[in-house]
Amino acid sequence: MSLLIHAFADEASPLVSGQIAAMRRNALQGIEIRGVDRVNVSDISDAKAREVRRQLDDAGLSVWAIGSPIGKIDIASGDHALHTEKLRRTLEIADILGTKRVRMFSYYIPAGHRPEDFTQAVIDRLGGMLALAEEAGILLCHENEKGIYGDTAPRCLELLKALPALRGVFDPANFIQCGQDVWEAWELLGDRIDYLHIKDALTDGTVVPAGEGEGQLARVLKAYIGRGGTAMTVEPHLQSFIGLQKLERDGARTETAGRYAGPDEAFDAACGALKKLLA
Image (cartoon, rainbow, N blue to C red):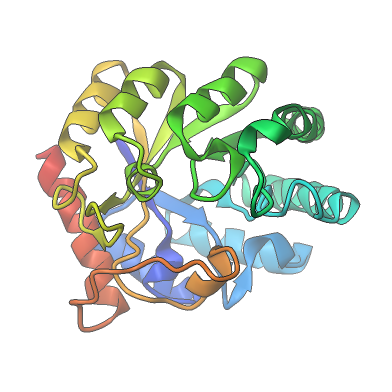
């Protein structure tokens, strides 16, 4: 059984040409595509999507998933009609790029409120999204992320149980940043996880190479592969990169290790750390 290793290669370069070079240099199979020549993938044109598909095809690389921002709006005050149109557009782009997966989230919770106050609203909104995705033949893959409804393992499980068509993405560093024990999260969610995001962190939330933090990456990888899992995406976050600030909720900040000379070095370190764990 061969493993499929992909990456958010926009952390190596904002340009698709640079992303392709980084993926080939690290012998990766493909990309979880997010930043496309300094534009979020959900906002590119059909013509641009076809151009990117040609570039990747020529390089022998595939698009594993769309790293979309879908679901990163406030569940109470967000413009849901506009967001639904963004989802429709993202599904069209996924089809052009030849992927069946869109990574997404489960809505920000308003400040001062409990996530539990919005359980049914989140499930209803996600259910509507899933109906659109099913019609398009695309899988929606939910990533645990700080500040959203599904930030802790119990709430992720709640969503995955309520919405069987929803796939799970497991990000150890994000769990650490939410105060969630990673192995407890794996024991709750492991059987429902579609693929992994390879990102590790210290207890203070600082992102570090896989295996250097509290994410128990070696243990998680062994369990995932042991039950037949094959796919993972390297998400370095070891250095600030173009677009990082836009990934965070207003006022939030991800601390990075900050010990690398540039984005290529940080990207290569992240890929190398994963391969060391897999050796």
